[in-house]
Amino acid sequence: MKNNIIKYILATFVVLLMACGSGKTNATQAELDRLATTVNNKDFKIVSDWAFPTTTMAMQQAARLLPPGNQGGSVNLIGNSNFLTISGDSITSYLPYFGERQMGGSYGGDDSAIAFKGLMKNYKVTQKKDSSYDISFEAKSNSENFRVNITLFPNLKSEMILTGNTRTPIRYSGSIQNKTESD
Image 1 (cartoon, rainbow, N blue to C red):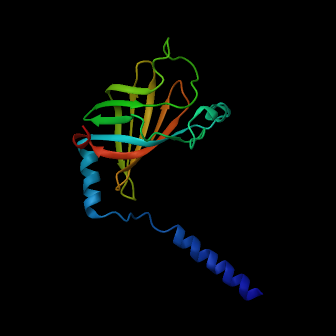
Image 2 (tube, rainbow, N blue to C red):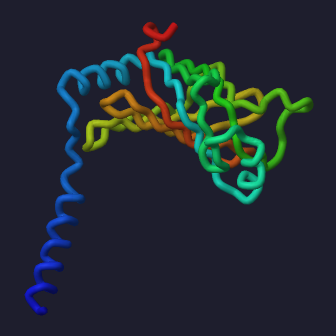
Image 3 (cartoon, one colour):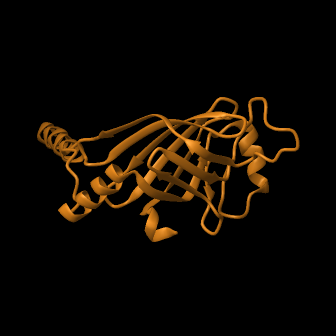
């Protein structure tokens, strides 16, 4: 019995060690170079497949209005026009927004999506140990200021979190493309 307990503890320890492995990526050198070039050129487009609104009680209730397969905490965007484009110091975007508005908004409700067209402020890039890049900046839509945090991975997948001053935060998951390839 005592031997079984020791074997169980040892096996658990080995599994945990393997699960916590190094932050090293399995990406090829070509993938790493392509991502570094894309980030350094500041010329790419992100198209999202999923939106992940902040799950609140109101979002759970509104989820009944979403098409089948969607929930209050995840909305499929495939087939819906959406993008975030960075070109030098400029940004343009059209991202459908699902979530709660805290206050404000324009009269007539024509700003339901997150739409940027202008310059970014406080642009910062950090390369992480797993060879992904964190990009953060501030952008302004017609009536709202946003803090944007983007993570770009060597396999060209992306994660974005947008935090506005009048809306609950929302996360998007998708992929990046060289802007010239997608236009």
